[in-house]
Image 1 (tube, rainbow, N blue to C red):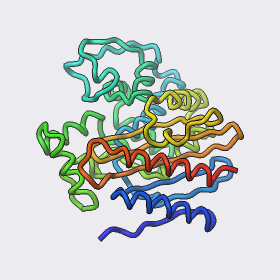
Image 2 (image 1 turned 90 degrees about the horizontal axis):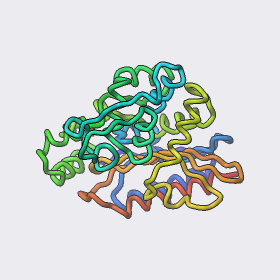
Image 3 (image 1 turned 180 degrees about the vertical axis):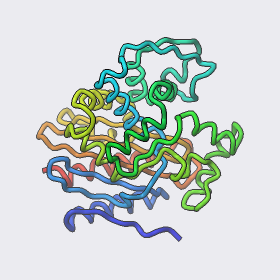
Image 4 (image 1 turned 90 degrees about the vertical axis):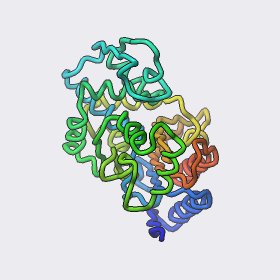
Length: 307
């Protein structure tokens, strides 16, 4: 039996919006969590905001912040060159992960590739410089709630291959079958063992980044700039396109996971942080309707929360 949905809404009307978004997702067979918060008024709406979820590439945002913190402290040079060999880099369809020949890239540009095109090889190259345990410890020191980093990006694919060989369709079937159960065949879909977090923890991280209340101002400013360069627009950004709006975000996609977090800023001064963490209930590598529903949820929440 499915667990009851727990709603968040500051006022009856906002709760109504949260319930409508959850109903839209449920109609598509989508489970998950959602939270949107006005960064200036504190008003918010959402559902299942404390639910722990594997983050896929959304974890690259806190990873980037820790790396940028080290740069701001003078412990890491953003111009330091890193050479990546395709024979030993991480799996992925974009950026350096898709390269066929060795390439040398500066640390600062690894950050750009990781956040703009969700480059797994760039992320794992940064984790060679700032290890997983150090990232996780820094998140704990910053008091980042339930945000956890436990493994490199390539570990997701290693675990999927271990469970399903090189059969992506079988891995997707296993992910959908196990969703909502206590046993995950693919280790990195288990929130207790994956890079994981909640919508509440992610929105709070975004609030602190946008309000310069974490790390150093130089680090948070650069993270905001880099998130504004993301090229993917199929989810939250799809319904937040206008000359008067700026979207800065990061998607996360792995098997049945379809996530995005970010902040929409309006020329009027409104700033709303959003975290949408979804798990599709069908075996489909492409689910444009789910992406669209996430976009509609973001637009609806923004319009309800803007001043």
